[in-house]
Image (tube, rainbow, N blue to C red):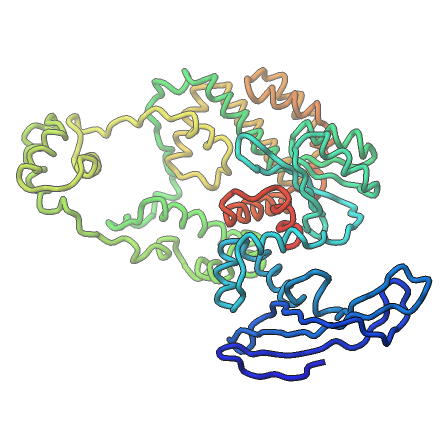
Amino acid sequence: MITSAEMDGEAIRIEARCTASGCPACGDWSAQIHGSYLRFPADLACAGRPCVLALRVRRFICTTPECPRRTFVERVPGLTRRHGRTTERLRSTMSKVGLALAGRAGARLAAHLGIVTSRNTLLRRVIDLPDPPATEPRAVGVDDFALRRGHVYGTVVIDAETHRVLDLLPERDAAALAPWLSRHPGIEVICRDRSGAYADAAHAAAPEALQVADRFHLWQNLANAVEKTVAAHRPCLRDLPAPVPEPEPEWETMDAPAAEDDEPSGKFAERARVHHAFVHDLLAQGLGLREIARHLSWGRHTVQRYARAARWQDMVKGRKRHLPSKLDPFKPYLTQPWAETEGKVTILDLHREITARGFRGHYSTVQLWVRKALPASNGTPPAPATPSIRQVTGWLTRHPATLTEEEKIRRKTVLDQCPELETTAQLVGSFAEMLTTFDGGRLTDWITDAMTAGLPGVSTFAVGLEADFDAVTAGLTTDWNSGPVEGAVNRIKILKRQMFGRASFLLLRKRVLLA
């Protein structure tokens, strides 16, 4: 009951007293007052002013002879707690600020809200919060996350249906996951990566559950295997013949109009050409703009712009513009000695000469312009450099529609030069088809073909698939995947960065489960 409220300088002083309450031990009421005292629990600010709460509390004598307590104190449920120095609403506010912003940022916000606290107090309020109520999930996703990258890893378990984090475990081995699975006997599906520790825990604690190997991790493992295969056949990449572009069909060149001088070129132009073809092919099949947007995971307005463009060149019209360069005043001077020596003068000499004349740019600026704008000494363009292992791996594992025309030609040159890489490309294509069409029934034949090919990397990958055959088959035939688990891991990374990576496992677990 509030007895008075008045201004006390810059603060608002509120005086209140408790109403009579029964003995917490026996429940009987008493009228014998032993004494009283004032409590000053901290409370939230009111209208931007500090609020001072003076709470008069009485102590009573219990009159029941059988009661083990001689005296008891009045209590105010919902306002304070025993031995507490803050009100419950201030304690709740501090907990929410700590959950949202952690210690340092939370303390800065609390100061603006008129709450006098420290970052350590906010973190203690978070740790004191109870865990969310336990649930019995039907399908779970399991993955590891880094507490200290390269040194200490933990395990995150989420509900694969609701995508809610269920628990965080301090280790990423079978000894940590198996007891957790045993406490939840209703689990029917376990989505995991290719980790052997998680597979062992699932076999031991939930033998009846369906294990699903994630498709993303399967493709990632295949890409690593292809890289090993390309590295083993690296000699095939040397001394490649010059790529010859395929001649255009006669029906395309007979009555074709002359090419414009300002034909768009570059990566954006190549991407616009491919995307324009995608959209118009789907339009020809009778799909609407919204259906195409959902199919390609694009924005509807992006699809609409491609649909309205009659030619792909219209999508890049106006984007190509000449930007001024520090090299512009020296280009006439660079062209003259290059032409007089028929391209035999070195680019380094040219850079030194124009530097003496006032050029302040880098050598690479001159090098790029000379190689692009000036002809070679023999009149033929220089042969392309030997492709790297990463480049060839990308040509083999990326969707063919995302490759540029130059990459397609160089990919064909490499495959013609090396039959083993041609076999690798065929295996990658057939596995990608299984992955995208959920046709896991062909997995046995694919493993047999990969092991028969005897390719280092890819054949080893096939042996691993055979050892985890049931989980891989489930990953290639069902809709279950570990995508939501990866999202939870990404959120854990954000929380760790917010706490400067110095949060204990207990505090990190509370923030992940309750935030």
